[in-house]
Image 1 (cartoon, rainbow, N blue to C red):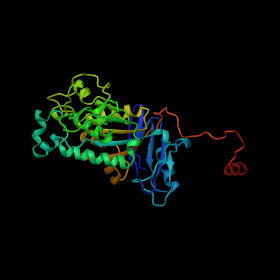
Image 2: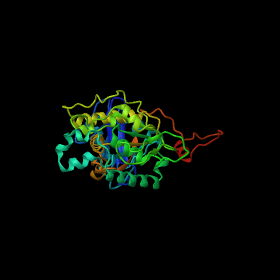
Image 3: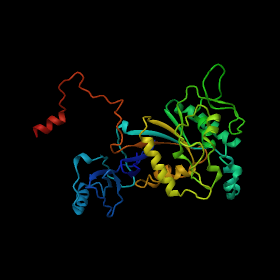
Image 4: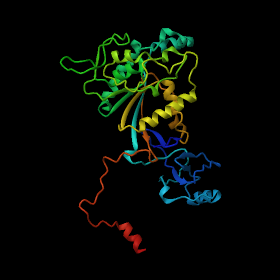
Length: 364
């Protein structure tokens, strides 16, 4: 796995593609008394530690580097080393405790009417005809195909929480992909979506046996100027999508969207970091997130700068409509207070257990 890291005051979390095998590389974490040195090297600040790519596989080269800069590594700060004769700084693997990881399944919404209009004429994005645009019939076909994939892969049985941006096209995608399908007679549960919500001509979608669905404003698309990115009243969504939790939406009307000011890419990326920090503090370990092209692209672009371009592209390229990518989100600091649920302490009952290699060291 390849490490992708961003930093803010109390949290430092890398992001990984779920499946990745590359050449081995070596990374060391060193304490530098709160200072960062990037002389001849790209360094990533991780809670006052640095991840430093090696010069070569020889220990003398590493020693020379630290002697040159008067840095003293500590044994406890050694993160992980996988020795190989063809190591380089562009690839490698990482090993992390499971309870310091989350799995994120990232989805861009399916095709909306604004996508079709904007493809033909970019000025259409300024039209109120596409206010909070819903999914096209083609978009619903995309939803149905992704739902089949999610069920065939067993992913629907693993997800503990579905988070959606509170716009019609993302909510429709979320309930269509991760919902239970058409409501069945005799099962008395609130539907995730009522029939024909958003003029969809679709039947109601059941919440039976589904994980919780939660609407979150932090993962919305660029705010401002484009009416397609303006949300409707909270009450309208609660009526059309009864089983979704809208309690985190603080205001009835959309006060975040401004008609004359468009959120910058940098502001979207900053909001993305806030979203990930909030996400990390939740208890769920496997989470689906249905969001937007711009939000996903600018949030994920903070990752992957320390790895091979192929891996960075796997993380940072724009999402297609209704595309799903699964990532592993790792806490390399101490942001997580969760205890391991699968670890077992051993020595129950207590007994002698001196390892042979430790015994050899004592005799040496």
